[in-house]
Image 1 (tube, rainbow over the protein chains, first blue to last red):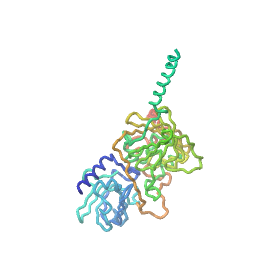
Image 2 (cartoon, chains in turn brown, blue):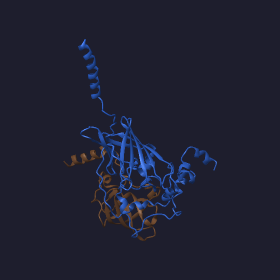
Image 3 (tube, rainbow over the protein chains, first blue to last red):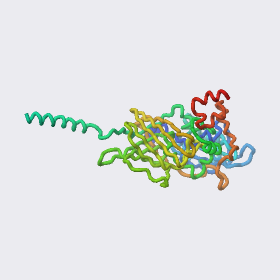
Image 4 (cartoon, chains in turn yellow, orange):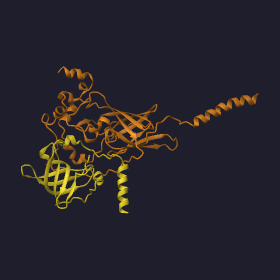
Length: 132
Length: 282
């Protein structure tokens, strides 16, 4: 039964065509040609449209603790990648890689990779684990 | 003799009635259905998003250029921006499927309106029943007020009463005084929409764009719930923007693509083929 449900969800996702969720311009918001990495603690996971956000407390390059706004895929798109609103929770220790925001003071990152060492959860390494 | 003359009159009349009954009373193209956008070379701009400072191909004036130069992308993390739908004029360029449904007048059986809906838009009716546009002071909305009239098989739509929107998602604005004329043409399974934008505030001349869609029988416009959250922490009352002349990213587009900075600044003076020869002399 569960298998049929997943099959149905998968087919629904496929037949819906290229479900694209672009809202703002990534090129205008992030340095897409650069990569940065933070290691910190999740404060809040906002699983929603148009894009999800992960608020993370982590040190910047100078070692000063900052609150980072990490942008992730929309709920619909991540839902097709086995991510749901319960995947991350406050207090989780994570390592996040991504494109840095154009304005360093805003401490924004567009996520391209996620790791949670406590249980080995990862995102961004398998084909299709991207968002737009 | 009398019988022959009567038959000669009635037969053609009967034939005429039969012919008329087999045709629509008024030529109307059916645009209803699910449509998939076709991006072609516009994919980088329409999906991932335009680059900062790329004003090429748009007949903007100085006021629009100033708005673009002082725009900071993080303004879209403000609560009032997060769930904002694309306006009726821009959404044709959006990345999602389009659903066009038709509203039928039950008495005349003619199409009285088309309703348009994309993933990230509001229901946008296009009225075909001859109703007038409201006065200028009436409410302005994301969908605007749209009426259509048939010009042969092409539907020409006029949109007014739009809230302020954008010409390109890198800060180039479109004012709430703009009027939009759209020409919808269907060629079998393809839909081409030519959008002519007239904006007395931010355009030096009309801005014309065409966009194509392909009929998609398996198309789906999914639900799109959106909630406002704190996307970014900032000082209370701060509105992200650049002081004029202080935007550090404006030259990036010109440098990356190796074109003169002046050519990236948009406006009629740089968007026609004649500019290429002028550019070479510089």
